[in-house]
Length: 173
Image (cartoon, rainbow, N blue to C red; front, side, top):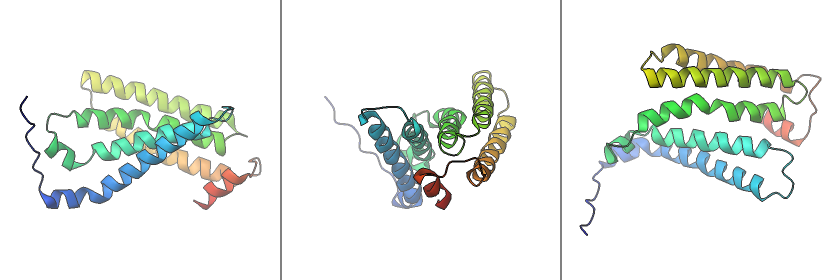
């Protein structure tokens, strides 16, 4: 069996991608830890850690797939398609995470954001499959993402939110 040809990647490209690689690996690792902790719990009544874990895993993968280093090292790897696919669904676990922490008193807000994210993911998938323009999907995704942060930060300081340890930590963050 022939030995694989070593990959030659310029050092400056590695250095340019180092910070993003580190952050991608950190997000991915924190997602693995959160999912593992959730799965190791005897009582799986609160899925908050699972939501965070899946979201962090997906976001870390997307950061890694966005590396230009990856396209040089593995030119046949379908990274652009994977980046687009992850971008379409990564918001869903994060909406569920924020909803399970800040939005417990306002479940309709979480349902509205999940519905918007799912519809956007379906529309984006159709755009990917049929080659339709992705610009409107990208703009809507950004609007939903910013709205999500603004609404849940506002909810975190509203009178109806139970202020437990998780909420205090997230407020501080």
